[in-house]
Length: 446
Image 1 (cartoon, rainbow, N blue to C red):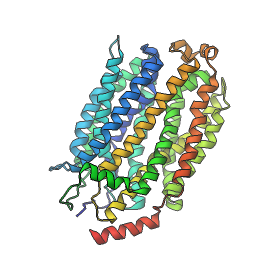
Image 2: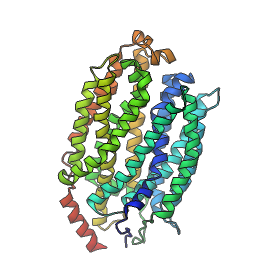
Image 3: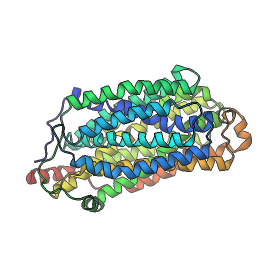
Image 4: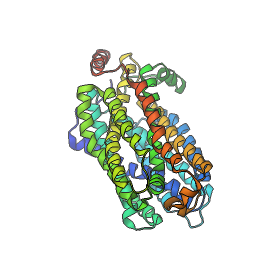
């Protein structure tokens, strides 16, 4: 029988979400701070850093299916998810410390090696962690609550990652190094609390485990999953571009680098505030329609960023609040939809390969983020942006390239991608009513 815990109290869900805080505190600097830090402050150049991070991300994405498949088949007294989470958390904490505290004379091979190992550890921890959350409940709306607890912790970790580097001092190296030390402490502690206090969720009803090829065939035939994955990928690129270019946009288009920390903090704080709103709307409109509404809301406000110029900090503050609210839906609702499409296999009497599904989910997300940095940075260099600290934060950059190129990459392209994602997911077939029927079929079989 499939073992799904009874409805867990809120305090256990809060503990389940705890590892999301340090794991997010790792990822945001990699997307936002590390590219500019290594390209500009450490002198590796935009094209070099973009190529290295793209290569590391491709390797990272390739490793996802194997780790997801293996985590579905791990056995032992601690369950199939927890050993992977613990091992991945340790590797992630160590590599994050090295990445955020590089040697004085850093070279490309160092960045490539550390990021490859960091992504490996992060995958080992996050894939089983997310799959574990999907298995904590079979209820359509309760799953959104579980993901909201996790993504709320993720946003709290993101706020920590935003605030700490700017709070330590003016030198970005000191801020990143302090964050690395904090992660060495927080990530092991949060992981230990979750694996001790939150129950495992194992399945023991399938005696013959399908092969990796068979699992791939089952997933490939899941049409709602393919639709959801396509929308997730498109929206991932749409979110990855502003994240990658945020600091450059503020320094170049707005010429207000001193406000970077406050604006970034506002953006993610607004995402936290938006979580209860989107959860409430999803109970009335359905999860996929609510997600579409959030993407449309973001598009309206991103359009305003195309017309900003030097000194328009107050207007951009409003845009950060509005688009940040939409981010809450991007984080909480798609993973909950992902758990629903997996139930199609269970209703057909097949094993619940949650880890394999979330591996492809994570793979799409990573490829989307890799494309964001791997395409945006070379385009910027082609347009005339120089790897010179003065050109990133001062007016010199406006003399070497047109700021509209950066503005179009930051806001224009994401609008088009989000519109495409909405078109793909609007007709998603698994509504609350359809999922209730799936649940009845699953109950009869199990």
